[in-house]
Image (cartoon, rainbow, N blue to C red; front, side, top):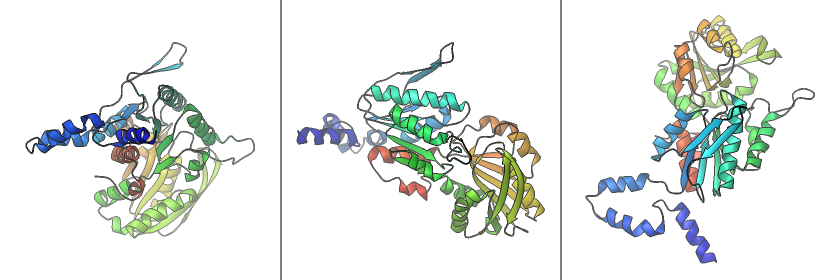
Length: 362
């Protein structure tokens, strides 16, 4: 019994493929002229399937291009009563399945679609199902901040687990404690390495910059970036009247004659970052940049950015940004697909993912 189980394990994780094809592939490699076969062999990843939901097909395509495999066949449609129907178009029996679906656009529909896809793969005998959720839905509802408030992020975590997810890969959770809502492994990747790279390549006077957090909650994120760049940081304390409305702001720190770089994990209506940019300009900042991991940009966000005094508003492509970039010339996009692709590759091969917490894969 132990012999057969170990053979099965070897076949699943063997980077070349099945044991039967091993000798044939070795023969091909032994021929020194056959370089194209060697490259093909190296790029092949057996026992892995990557499927895309409808929320962000472009990111999923970039991930599979990086991995050198094809996107899995899946058909998603809605019935006339708007129920979601998903049909997985190929066998996933014994496969390591990754489903890419971001919590953007029509959040509820996309979440339901993800749950159905996970369950469809699980009951089709997939060996492991990993949900790749670049922007985690309902992440802001992570605590009971007033009477009778729901903790919806915990509910989403339960739904994903019950649907059959074995592992979650996400980026810049609004609160890292959300990882504790799950009883399954969660890899929370950071956009920070990609952000540092962008700052050094695109802001010439970054050595004379100051990293600013638009609220106290982001202080840890900002101090980490400031330390890596060896610059100072500042903080803006805000008081909210209600959700998406800021009452007052107080700047803590000196930004006079410096380039201010606002850093936050997400921007929705952009009221906070636009108020913060105004405050920084009044305090004597020469230029103001905003760097945000998840650019949700709902409601009046685009007009707020167009009317604000930003040099650039930089977001990652955890959420589709093509339409936003057409409507606002200040919005720029950092591609983080290689970080997700590398996380998928390392997870599939049973390698450590911690390298990605401080480095951008090339």
